[in-house]
Length: 337
Ligand code: AHG
Ligand code: MN
Ligand code: MN
Image 1 (cartoon, rainbow, N blue to C red):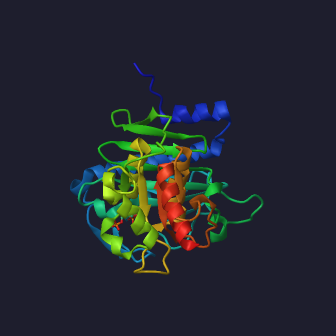
Image 2: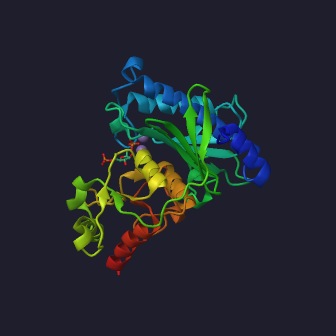
Image 3: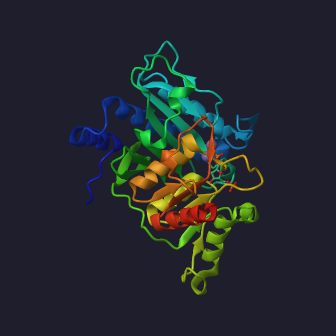
């Protein structure tokens, strides 16, 4: 029988063997995992828990908030504010940063999250998730401000997501590969189910919201047209398309069997770099994907090299199987010359 170890055991082993995880970071991840379990319980209750539908409010990005967006945000804050491991948090659902209240000890880490990704899928019972990114406050910096969060993705100490689907799966990286943990509901713990997550370099599967095709720039249209042309076109092979509309679920598929995910810039809102947010969607996913041997760019540059200037800044995203990401990026760079 396969030896199954819990998330707790895995984290302690990592800490001992590799010294890769400081004590405070280990605590932080355990707390985030516990929050995800609570969110999973609410998600699973669905209509019975009266968690479906709109909350009747809007977030800072002008998006209608669902009840679960707000519940998940609150669960993450409550779980994380008192442990002493954090200096502050930031979320898709909050305009400014959330300082750890004075009554609790302050730590060195900064936590950012998309509490509920794929909100449009909540009410229709399709996979959704939580995405998170962990940074460390610059040494010697007194207090904490939004400035402290504006670090490139390459500075992340850890990143991950939890997908609430047919299974609840937590996926994590500390910069030494990617590990997946499946929630065992009877035991109430996450159990390691894969610690060598690898994305194949080549793929025949792409994910993009095709209904926006007419709004994309020419290199993006070229890439997808070539995929659609199939075995008799320039690529010489047939492609398959998938679009779940929950980034978490689309990225989970890519980490499981490869593929390329794209949410490009489009000309309806030319001043917006894209739809997805850099700090708590693109950066953590880029970290995971790179750690699994894939690549992640904004169609021109590596996502994790981008210097953020705003907490809620948006970015164009191309990530997944390396050779496809390189191709999409090359088409854009070629066109820019
Ligand atoms: P969120 O629910 O956190 O706002 O994110 C939704 C995002 C992402 O998960 C997904 O890939 C994309 O929006 C779907 O967009 P379309 O509705 O344009 O397909
Ligand atoms: Mn999201
Ligand atoms: Mn969200």
